[in-house]
Image (cartoon, rainbow, N blue to C red; front, side, top):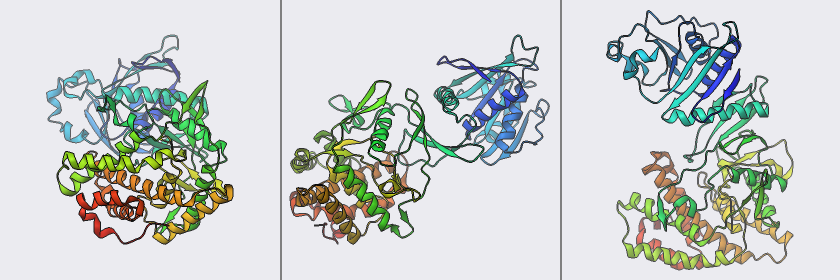
Length: 520
């Protein structure tokens, strides 16, 4: 199987023999999902049924499955682990109206559908599809075929990404791996798949295309730009190299296509730092020591990506911190009280936060990973020391307060960290920092911790409400009481009295959650 055309509009592949056709079927089978439509065109004997048969056997996970041509039955349905597969042949169809009698819409709604001779009833097929045109390859004595693949609708992007993926795995030695989708989390642009080789070793495929430019929200700039969110996969590559250079366990990168936003990275496994009872203290302590080591180190602001390209870690500046806390007024407040706050209340909120954050802006800065919490920490018991803490999801790193990531870990949005454990681990952090620098100011860090904990809790309340209302992910709402408790615990710090007053005035329902004092 050889790619002959790398144009953006399609993908032309030379299939030398039947084995090459089966390899193409494997590539397609790993890509196809319920609801997808694949149309197969070409003259008699061009190989449409051969390719369809190979695809169906792979999707059904039955290499001996009998797959006759549906020329006379018109439509045949098979069941596979991922759902139904419909194989149709329109050669004897006189038009799309005849499909109604076959119950076409009901049969194909949630199935992977393969259609031969689609042009006979094209008016009844959805436009979004993968189209494959098959023809005899010249000079092969009838043995070879040429497959010309094209995508319409969202399949155009998927086909470009599939072609880039195939080039990447061939270049990096993972061409024999199968793909298994992994559950997605809050990200709307990034996803992961597990690559599994026949001998059992695994890697992760990270699919992180360039972030689309969102609508302007302030002075002509989108939210993502103001909040300093990574716009390409370059930031992940740079931070990955930077963390590994510090002796920390970020995943190795086995292969990359930066333009397509594809990475093949080390699979660190799935052993968590929590169990059914919540945080595992020893593992959280080691994760805390990782931060203490990182924050006690002089770290560069510019990191290499590769091929002469550098990534400059952006500052976690006042504008970024403010637009994040405003997510509370934009999304959480309407969720809680059913209406927006007045303009004066919002202005008061921004003004108090601006004043509160001045100490943070003027204070020490370090690499702030921003998502340093249990879902992104993997326990690696076979390694030693700090290397036992595997770190993922750091592409949005900024230069910010050391207290931010400590609060992110010890006030975990998805796991309840008991106040006594939180206080104990803050002590672990402070002792480690003092050991590296006797001048480390514990009192200043305690204030910064309360401020950054409040900022993060405020932001996450807005994000989780947004995930429910905008993105249809209501399961994030179950975390709100925990985050509200963290918020009020932080607001009890004396330096946050003015900010606490705002929350008491405009969100009085939070007051019952005051049941803990902030860490000293």
